[in-house]
Length: 389
Image (cartoon, rainbow, N blue to C red):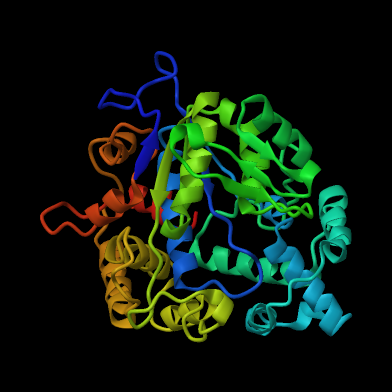
C-alpha cells in the first residue's frame, strides 16, 4: 500500500475532536462484458470487507459507477461491434458466458472502428444514461451473484454520471498547469505531471476518445475535496496510472492511499478475461460448487477467507480449488463456534487493523480470523463485516 500526503502521526487523525473521518473507496470498475473471474472476485471481496469494516469506524462512500466508464473505447467499441454483427439480438435470454464469448470475438477481431461510429453511443450514454442491453443483462446477473455472495451492491444498475464534463475536467487540469492539449494541432491531450518526475500520459486521443484515466478524473476531481481520505483498489499493472491520479488529487485535500490487489493466476499464468478461459472458474460456477456442500453463511465467509487471507495481496498463488474447499470447511467451523459477542467492543477490535489511515486493512482483519492462538471470532464481527445481513 502506498500513500500520497500521508499524515506523519502513527495514529489515525481526526478531522475534529470526536469526529469521524470521511473516506471514499474507489475501486477499479469491471467492464460488464463477461463473467466475473477469480481476479475480479478477489478485488470485490477485498473492497467489500474494507468498506463494511471501515463503515463501523468512519463515514465511508463506496464509489463504483459504471456510468462513468461506459464512455471508454473498450466498452463503446464492444457495443458497436454487437450492433453491427448481431443486430437486435435478445440479450435478456443470454447468459454471461454467451455475452463473454461475443466479447472474446470482438477483442480477437481487433478492428478499431472510426471515432464517428462511436459518437452516437457516447452521446446516448452521456446525455441520456443509455446502456446497451448486453451490458444491462450482465449487470443484472452480477447483481444476483452479489446477493448470493453477500457483497454490498454500490449501484450496479444505477445511473451515476461523473460530476464533470470532459471539457470541464480538462479546464481544471489546464488551470493547474497539468494539461498538454494538442487538439488544435490535430494531436491528443496529455496529463502532464513531468514536474513531479512522472511521464506524460495520453488521456484523450486526437479524435476525441477519452480513456479510463480521463473518465476517472471526470469522476474524482469533484469528489475528492469532500473527503479526508481516498482509497484506490486496483490491479498492480495499472499502478502508473494510479500514481498519476494520486498526484492530481492529493493537492485538493485528501490523503490518497493506493492499494494494489494482485490478480489470481490459473495454473501459474495470469490470464486476461478478454481471451476467455473462465469456464468453471467464474462466479456462477464457484457459487454452484460451494453451495452444493455448504450453507450460504459458510460460502460467504469461506470465499472471503480464500480470496483475501489465503491468496493474499500479491499474485504469486494460483487458484486452487482444494484450498477454496478447505476455506469453506474452516468457515463452517468458525461459524459453529462463534460466540455472540466479545470484548472489547467491535470498533476496538476492528481499529487494531488500521495503521496511519482510517480504513481497515482487509488482509490483516481476515487473516486474524485464522490465527490459531486467538479466540474464535465473535458473531457480531462476522455478521457486520463478512456475512450478508
